[in-house]
Image (tube, rainbow, N blue to C red; front, side, top):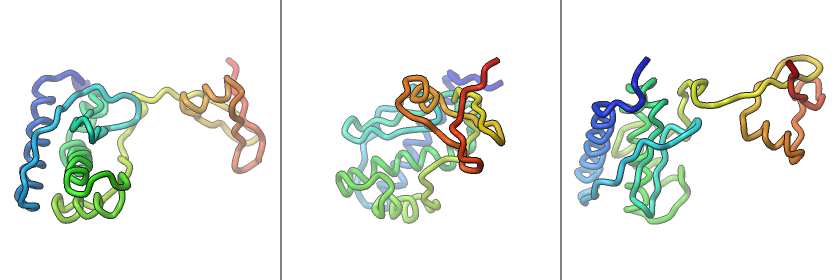
Length: 165
């Protein structure tokens, strides 16, 4: 099993961030400073860009399990958010400006969501209806427990109930 706290892997991410920023600087004819890079993103989110803090956060568990996808897509995706903010100010997170940066600078298809396996990082809870079993996220499970939300099956229309063991 890969080590999610590997210093060498973290260093590779930092180098890839630097490479992407240099690529953007060359293409756009303007400098970009290196952001703070942390490895404290949690849950199913692979990475996030904190624009006003000029910071990138990456999920160490998803990184360790998906090194190639991070290097190829996740890191340029997050760097593109910072570059877009620097060039255009506050705009829609995955709007036309960000899509332009993804295509023209990084030569990547702009995708808003990753396709990584999140089973290690996302707790799910088993629910049932009249026709099948359902997996609900921790957030949805908590809403049901607090009686803030009810979910129903799209097929049989029955309200989902938590499985009792």
